[in-house]
Length: 227
Image 1 (cartoon, rainbow, N blue to C red):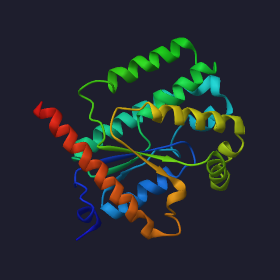
Image 2: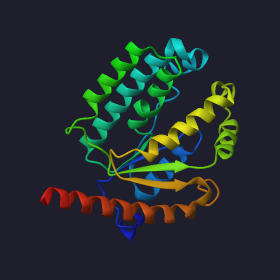
Image 3: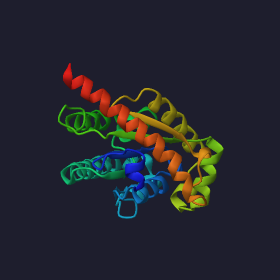
C-alpha cells in the first residue's frame, strides 16, 4: 500500500500550501507531492519580471506585481483542475488580495484606484460559484524569529535587504488573515513540529492529518449537496 492509500487521500485531491515568506511552503509542497506521487505547482519567482523592481520601489510596482501574480495563479488553478487534480500547490491565490494588495493599499504604496481595480478583477475571477477551490489549504505557521531566520538563511538579496519591519507586518497580517479565512477547509501546521529537510519520515504525521482533513471536508460537501 502506498502512502496516499495508507492515509486515505483521494487521487484527485488538490492541496494548497499557504504561509508567510520563508515559512517553508516550497519544501512542504515538494515533500507532499513526492509522498503522494502528485504533481506540483510552484510559484514562478525566477521568471517574474516585476519582483526585483517591486522590492526596490513598492509604490511604483505593487499594482503591476499583484496583477501579474493574479494572472499566473489563475492560469495555474485552471490547469490543475483541467488535469483532474492530484496536485500540491505552492501558495494560494487568496493570499494576494487578503494580504499583499490590502497591505500596500493601507500603507499608501498602492493607490485607491489601483486597489479597487485589483479587487474587482479578483472578485470577478475567483469569488464566484464557478471557481474551483482546493480540497484543503495547509497553513504553515511558526514564530516570527524562526521565519526571519529562514529568510536570512535562504539568502535572496532582495529579501535580505528588506527592512525587518516589513516582515513583522506581513507576519501579523497573515495571522489575521488565516483566522478569518473560509474559502476552503484549513489545516494549520506548526513548522516546529516537523523537519522535512533532515527527517524525511516526518512527512507521515502530516499525511495523516491531511487525510483526516480532506475526508472530513468531502463528507461535509456531500451532506451539503444532499440538503
